[in-house]
Length: 171
Image (cartoon, rainbow, N blue to C red):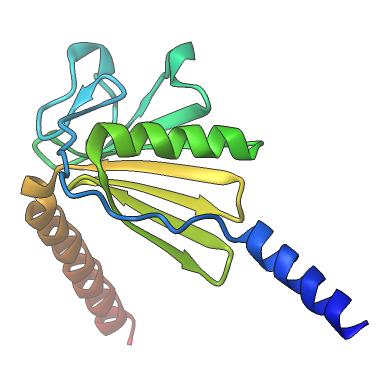
């Protein structure tokens, strides 16, 4: 009985653990994502009424991704592009990871509490898989990272200052 349980445990563990993902030596950099150029201003057809993000209609070829948005800096340069998908089977996941690895190279693969899987490809592409079903594929313009963080820090300072001033007036 003990041998049977040991064998069963071994089979379950080995079946659940695929071969570990090994980083590739050569890493590429994404400059375009879903028809948008990172670091550039969006084309005219993406003229939107907001200055900090825009929603992108994806073509059928972008499947399994069904929604996409871009984060913009104040001058409307594209800082990041994120697409979202619900992947329904292991083969689709495996093919997506293989395609990204082939195109950009695998930098790292981490799992957090078996609920969130994170892959980094190339120098600026990240795939997050939440609960094995919801996929977020993010392309970032690393040259604009400091500008984006400065913008967010300035917004936080401005909100804090406005809130403090509102409290001063109210008290």
